[in-house]
Image 1 (cartoon, one colour):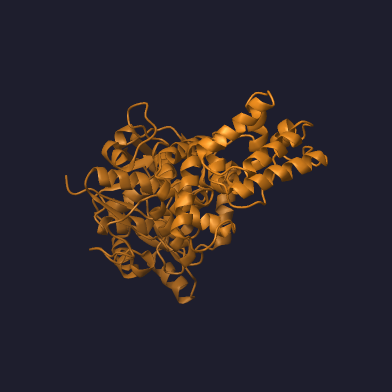
Image 2 (image 1 turned 120 degrees about the vertical axis):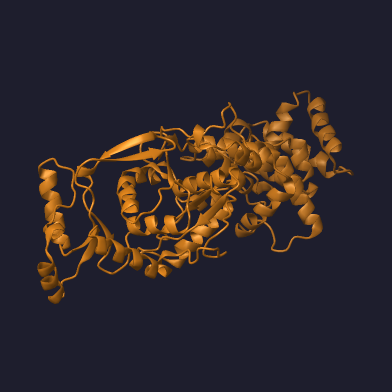
Length: 498
């Protein structure tokens, strides 16, 4: 077999959808597994909606989850250009061939006439397809309409009978009744090719061997196959990936959460975790294994284990998976990702000294076991960076409003203030020592102390997190919580979720 060549051909008319990222990842993994080439091609024939901002979002999204490309608009390659609006002459050559052979014809129908045809067919319970008069115009009629300056598009003449069979690597043989297809537009009135024309020409001229795309394109494939045959193009192998559904098994949409890939970056997902998550939607490595690194994904990926059934975009599972990656991630790497987020929130200064950087890495290393998203470091870990942190309702309800707590917090603050050594062992000794001296369980000191120092009832080891805070700050926090408790200001807040 010749060298495997796959492609991802997005339209720059919006952000990179998670479904598009899923398709790109599968095409990329297949090419990498087979030692072939992965091509990025930009389908910008929607000249009205295509934007540079959307193009940049595509680049950023793919790069974020670790997808690179061997050929593309920004890296070049042997089949340049890789942007469709720069390839119009190539399409014109193929239009001429189809017109000369009679497999394409001018269609002068107006949008209003086409809409009327659709409504009539729908009223009769017939699937809408083109049945206009233009298919049968003779040359005299065509020349008359051209002389009148009437605008036209170009349609491809499909076979009216028989079947078109698509041999799909995932779904097997799929047959389509040609009588239901209808002649489709291959050139718009603007002169631009439609998706159907451009994708067929580009895949052929770029030597694409495997067309890996979403299931929703399967219905287009018989039309594309007929177009390839009319142009004497060799068929690539097709593989139509399963749809991605929400947890309620409906089409993935904004009601299930964000559909923009980069929103998950902003929410605190690690790129390697999102890549792993997308890879196991509709594909299995053949074992009960869900955490796979990049090299393992490439090694194990084949189309044989891609499911025909829809995959589920389960955000809870994605979040769990991200937490697993956080646990094993290097603190230095996580710190690099967190610094911009903390700076944006105004929680750390712009330029970190080596000492401050080292301290931040220790904070990250301590917290990563209990976090699931990078944003958790910013939200739950706020107490590391500022005195302006809230007391959550669980902390208020369970500890900080109790009558005996203020006195105990003051006693602890007094003992901590006198400490000469601020280290893990000394902190633990003082806290447990107070519990022994007033004859209460250690938890009766530890839990109120955590609530006062962090505003929370859960988190990393209290002794370890206190060691990373200035002693003076801990003392001030204990006394502030005691004072608020005595003043009756630690009652749970109304309408605040715990």
